[in-house]
Length: 92
Length: 92
Length: 92
Length: 92
Image (tube, rainbow over all chains, first blue to last red):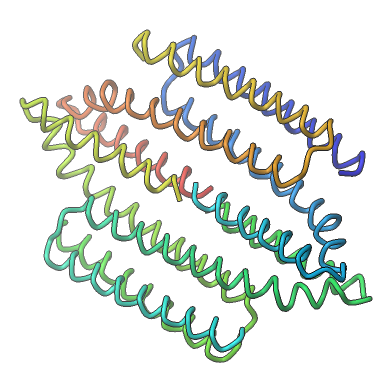
């Protein structure tokens, strides 16, 4: 990742970390279950957005390089990985 | 899509269509709600698998051609579409 | 399900069936892969909405009856099923 | 939540927090994008499991009490919340 993407991704993950600590406090303070479930959902949405930023960077760098490469095996590898990401993120 | 992929995708969609008709009968015959919900889930899994096959074909054809193209705008377009697919399928 | 819910659910499933047939035509007519993937996503969203309507009905009927029952095993059964629905629909 | 559930949920959230910190290190150390995306997916699966445990507790406590209550408005409220949880977690 270039430095800007890296900084952005780390900042998002730090924010997720703080959010998860906040949810621990909600549990300790006996907050309403449904509100806790909703906060966990918000964390998951933030993580999906982070995955999207990393995938964006990946497509512009590794995938572009590999697909422009003359070696078919390299292209197959990156395409296989994108399909795997699609499969695992949609199987959740 | 090449003919083989096309045939495979259409066959999967026909199977989904039959499955959905079967679920209509389950509703008419007052089958247990939870069983109906599970059958709908199975249809959704079959549709996700179909999307994956179409995406696989797309990456091997349009995306590969566009990324190997000398025109940066064409590359950007296909990359943007993959990210959009990731975003919409994970926002559901 | 009461008659009104049943009619509504069947109508939604018939609409899904028509949508899936339309997507088959898109494949036959070589429509753009990304557009086909998006249409499949719309079908999945319609199916999730249908599951929600069935779950709504189920909570108001079977689940309410079972939880008001004096038999703990009946309550456990319906609660277990709701958790199973949560698990399978979120594991996709 | 009873004490046992509370301890279990907090422990899971602490584990998620550690996992997210580990992913930050992966980003700093320029680990492969696809591996980072997969680790984020594992965190999301752990969060879904945590939601499931909280929902289980909620159904056995608040929901059971409310549905056994003579006040229809209380029942409607908890049923509406379960449907909302279903909708938001499946719209992601």
